Length: 116
Image (cartoon, rainbow, N blue to C red; front, side, top):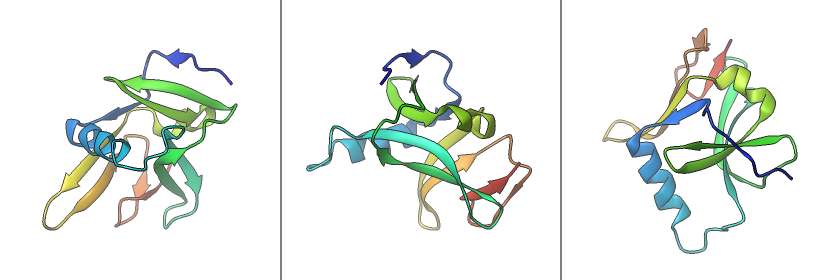
Protein backbone atom coordinates (compact mmCIF):
# COMPACT_ATOMS: atom_id res chain seq x y z
CA UNK A 1 0.00 0.00 0.00
CA UNK A 2 1.43 3.33 -1.05
CA UNK A 3 1.83 6.13 1.47
CA UNK A 4 2.94 8.78 -1.02
CA UNK A 5 1.21 12.09 -0.45
CA UNK A 6 -0.27 13.85 -3.47
CA UNK A 7 0.78 17.50 -3.26
CA UNK A 8 -2.28 19.24 -4.78
CA UNK A 9 -5.29 18.55 -2.57
CA UNK A 10 -8.50 18.11 -4.57
CA UNK A 11 -10.59 19.02 -1.51
CA UNK A 12 -10.23 21.88 0.97
CA UNK A 13 -11.43 22.16 4.55
CA UNK A 14 -12.40 25.25 6.51
CA UNK A 15 -10.78 25.95 9.88
CA UNK A 16 -14.03 24.84 11.57
CA UNK A 17 -14.02 21.51 9.70
CA UNK A 18 -10.37 20.86 10.56
CA UNK A 19 -11.00 21.63 14.23
CA UNK A 20 -14.00 19.26 14.39
CA UNK A 21 -12.15 16.44 12.60
CA UNK A 22 -9.16 16.84 14.92
CA UNK A 23 -11.54 16.80 17.91
CA UNK A 24 -13.07 13.53 16.69
CA UNK A 25 -9.65 11.99 16.07
CA UNK A 26 -8.46 13.04 19.53
CA UNK A 27 -11.40 11.44 21.34
CA UNK A 28 -10.77 8.60 23.76
CA UNK A 29 -11.07 5.26 22.01
CA UNK A 30 -10.44 6.60 18.50
CA UNK A 31 -8.83 3.86 16.38
CA UNK A 32 -5.53 5.43 15.25
CA UNK A 33 -5.34 2.88 12.40
CA UNK A 34 -8.29 4.62 10.73
CA UNK A 35 -7.82 7.40 8.16
CA UNK A 36 -10.13 10.27 7.28
CA UNK A 37 -11.92 9.27 4.06
CA UNK A 38 -13.47 11.73 1.62
CA UNK A 39 -15.41 10.33 -1.31
CA UNK A 40 -18.68 9.64 -3.05
CA UNK A 41 -21.05 6.70 -3.31
CA UNK A 42 -24.08 5.99 -5.44
CA UNK A 43 -27.45 6.87 -3.97
CA UNK A 44 -29.19 9.78 -2.39
CA UNK A 45 -31.88 12.06 -3.76
CA UNK A 46 -29.69 13.41 -6.57
CA UNK A 47 -27.71 10.31 -7.58
CA UNK A 48 -24.44 10.56 -5.61
CA UNK A 49 -23.85 11.02 -1.88
CA UNK A 50 -20.82 12.43 -0.12
CA UNK A 51 -18.68 10.19 2.07
CA UNK A 52 -16.85 11.69 5.04
CA UNK A 53 -15.75 9.31 7.75
CA UNK A 54 -12.97 7.13 9.06
CA UNK A 55 -11.86 4.01 7.23
CA UNK A 56 -8.97 1.72 6.37
CA UNK A 57 -6.72 2.72 3.49
CA UNK A 58 -7.29 0.63 0.35
CA UNK A 59 -4.88 0.00 -2.56
CA UNK A 60 -6.86 2.30 -4.88
CA UNK A 61 -6.69 5.22 -2.42
CA UNK A 62 -4.51 8.29 -2.74
CA UNK A 63 -3.26 10.12 0.34
CA UNK A 64 -3.78 13.88 0.36
CA UNK A 65 -2.83 16.62 2.77
CA UNK A 66 -4.61 19.91 3.33
CA UNK A 67 -2.92 22.27 5.80
CA UNK A 68 -1.66 19.37 7.92
CA UNK A 69 -4.88 17.35 7.73
CA UNK A 70 -4.23 14.05 6.00
CA UNK A 71 -7.05 12.19 4.24
CA UNK A 72 -7.54 9.33 1.80
CA UNK A 73 -9.67 9.32 -1.33
CA UNK A 74 -10.28 6.78 -4.06
CA UNK A 75 -8.40 7.93 -7.18
CA UNK A 76 -11.57 7.94 -9.29
CA UNK A 77 -13.49 10.24 -6.92
CA UNK A 78 -11.37 13.29 -7.77
CA UNK A 79 -13.44 13.75 -10.92
CA UNK A 80 -16.52 14.47 -8.77
CA UNK A 81 -14.89 16.27 -5.86
CA UNK A 82 -12.08 18.45 -7.26
CA UNK A 83 -12.47 21.96 -5.84
CA UNK A 84 -14.97 20.95 -3.13
CA UNK A 85 -14.86 22.64 0.28
CA UNK A 86 -15.86 20.85 3.48
CA UNK A 87 -17.14 23.01 6.33
CA UNK A 88 -18.43 22.36 9.85
CA UNK A 89 -21.53 24.25 11.02
CA UNK A 90 -22.31 24.39 14.72
CA UNK A 91 -25.28 26.74 14.85
CA UNK A 92 -28.75 26.51 16.34
CA UNK A 93 -30.41 25.72 13.00
CA UNK A 94 -27.62 23.75 11.39
CA UNK A 95 -25.09 21.35 12.88
CA UNK A 96 -22.82 19.09 10.89
CA UNK A 97 -20.49 18.95 7.93
CA UNK A 98 -21.49 20.77 4.76
CA UNK A 99 -20.12 20.39 1.24
CA UNK A 100 -19.69 23.13 -1.37
CA UNK A 101 -18.99 21.37 -4.65
CA UNK A 102 -18.44 23.44 -7.81
CA UNK A 103 -18.93 20.28 -9.92
CA UNK A 104 -22.47 19.62 -8.73
CA UNK A 105 -25.13 20.53 -11.26
CA UNK A 106 -27.93 19.68 -8.83
CA UNK A 107 -28.05 19.14 -5.07
CA UNK A 108 -30.77 17.91 -2.78
CA UNK A 109 -32.31 19.92 0.04
CA UNK A 110 -30.33 18.14 2.74
CA UNK A 111 -27.02 18.97 1.01
CA UNK A 112 -25.60 15.46 1.24
CA UNK A 113 -26.32 14.28 -2.30
CA UNK A 114 -25.68 15.75 -5.73
CA UNK A 115 -25.49 15.04 -9.44
CA UNK A 116 -22.94 16.04 -12.04
